Structure formats: C-alpha cells, structure tokens
Length: 443
Ligand code: IFM
Image 1 (tube, rainbow, N blue to C red):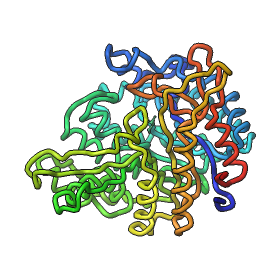
Image 2 (image 1 turned 90 degrees about the vertical axis):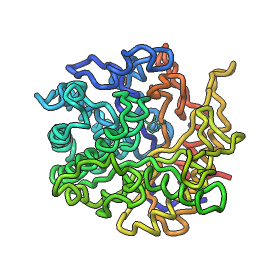
Image 3 (image 1 turned 120 degrees about the horizontal axis):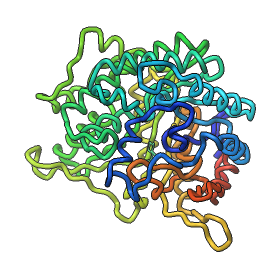
Image 4 (image 1 turned 180 degrees about the horizontal axis):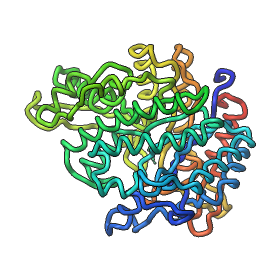
C-alpha cells in the first residue's frame, strides 16, 4: 500500500507532556502544574517533572526521529514559557528554546508543525477566570502574535488549538483535566470562547508567518447507532453534533449545529455580535485526532440516559475500542460534507499499552504494530477514495506524561525509562521506520 509522494510521516507530542524543566528559564506556572500539585488528581502523584526532559534532550529526540526516518514533527509551544504570567512581559528565553528546537528540526530535514495551545494555560490567567473569561482571548492573541512572529519565518504549519472538546468538557465539566471544574454551562461557554480565540489565532498566523498555513486539531469520535431504531439514530446524530460538529462547523462558517444547540437550551453560550464572523476564518488544513468510536443506544426513546456499547474484546488498556473503520468513515464524511477543507492531516493516532522492557532489553509491542497497520490502511483507503490526507502523526514519539494517568499510560513508539531518561525504540518504532522509509505499509 503505497502512499502519495510527499506524504508526511511524523510523530506528535505536547509541551507539558514531554518537556519537564517546569521551573527553568523563567517559565511561569501553568494550570497543569497546579492541578498536578493537587493531591489525588494524577496517578502515582506524577507531575510535569521530569516528563521526558525534552527541554534539554531535544537534540536526542530529533536524532531519534531521524533514526526512524520521519520527515515531520508535531509539537506544541508552552505559553507559560513565552509569557510566564499569561499577558505580561514576553520571556525571550522561552522563545529561544523553541527557536533552537525549530532550527534543529529544519537542520535534520524534519518539517515542524507547531500547536499554539495544547492545554498548558498560564495559571495567572486561570486565577482571573481562565477560558471562561473573554480577556483570556485577548491574552491568547498577544501570545500567538509573539510566538508566530518569532518563529513564523521558519515554521509554516500552525495549529491554533488541540482538542478544544477536551479543554472545554474534560477540563470544565467532567473535571478530570486541569482546571478540574464541574460546570456544564461554563464548559459550553469555554468552547465558544476557544472558537473566538481560534479565529484570532488564524488571523495572526496568516499575518505573521509569511506563507504560513493555519488549522485546528479536533479529536473526533465516529458515532454509530447500536440498533436501527429512530431513537438510536437520533442519539448517534446528537453525539456526532455535540462532539464533532460543534467544534468544526463554526470554524468553517456554518454556525453551531442545530440539534446540539437545541440540546444545550438553558445553558447556551453568550455569543457577542461579530463572534461568528471572527470564528469563521476558514481552514488551510484540518488536524484530525482519531482514537476510537462510540456506539449509542437509547432504550427509552429520549426519556432516559443514553447507553454506550463497545466491543469489550477489542479495547486498549485505556478501554478505548479499536475501530479503524471509524477513521475511514470520518475522513469520508469530511471529504463529502466539507469540500471547503483543502487538506487533512491525521495529527494524532496511537494506542496505550502496558509496555515493559523484556529480558532482551527490547520492548515487544505487536498489538501496537497491528493497531497502526490497520489505521494506516484506513487512511490509505480514504486517500484512494480521494480524501486529501497529506500526512500522519503517530501519538507519540515516546512514552510521556499522559495527563491524569501520569507516566503510567504508555503511548510511545519509543519506550521512556522515566528514572534514567533512556529511550528504547519499541518494535512498533522499528516497524514505523520501515513504513516511513518506504512510504508504504509493508505486507
Ligand atoms: O496524550 C493525549 C494528547 O495530549 C491529546 N490527545 C490524546 C492523547 C492520548 O490520550
């Protein structure tokens, strides 16, 4: 299965998950530092230190990417390194770090894809209401301008936000991510404020990075009815609208999807005049993060709770059902219904596994190879059907700080020994190197 010429093969990471050195060079506190310091929030009490110490080990990590034959890298910038208190003075040492990283990537022939916001909001802004406060949108625009003006001569592929659904709903309603709030109305307002910030970010990317391109990264969940009943179809459609379309439609000028909007009656966000126009900047590309699907069942015809079903025999250690067809279905849907999106990247895909170093010093992870193979094949099938998928970023380059799961949940194609910081390429990493080198899935 050959991929098109020029296809990008990379890995993805995020600042807080890999950098460590949370106190270095004037970095400010982020909401994740605060959340990790709250007893009981993170498995084993792990924190952002040491993570993978990529703040100082980035040359090693780039060498690793070269060893794997990768030609692109998706990473994120830590706002608290660049503007430690969120909206005050710019910290040149923070910008310098990313400048060195970008130069080293380019030197290694690896194309940088930078995400402006992958969840590490400066705590000082949270103290003033965080994403629930519209002043944070202005602060974000200032931060984006500082970052893009400094790096935009070399970084041409920019993403404003990573997974705004998670920021809004896991952070502000479910409460399992920083800032750990549980307020549904607030989560909905946050989602709207993130959209507005995305619009500002897109304008800045286009102004400050000559020839630069901007997009957003959405985690989408393929949604299916469990049974062929009207109620199950309605439940699947509602999930699709709340989870996927709520975050996509506004950024391509289609407003909020009607069933989701209706479902939030009584908790609808404050939308200011001009917001929807500002949000609609179009996309130069869409980043799709795909991990799993949801199958919905509504036994009560709309009166009671919606149930979720999964194939329990086919889940990862995180209990996420493995369903590559869902990636194909989402890509086909995007291509069919959103012709205005010119390019799509798979900006994350991968699986957690309880990896261990064997007696031979190696990490054997055949399930991950199978997982990747099936998902690469789904992307390949979509490309064959005309979907403009231009690159694939496996999550993740190496095991890292997996949010509430700390370092206990391993997603890397490289194993990280968090005691010694040794990296060991897993079998899946070696297999991925073959794919990247051949630009094809081996038999
Ligand atoms: O680690 C996360 C990443 O930060 C966002 N997408 C999902 C990954 C796996 O949970």
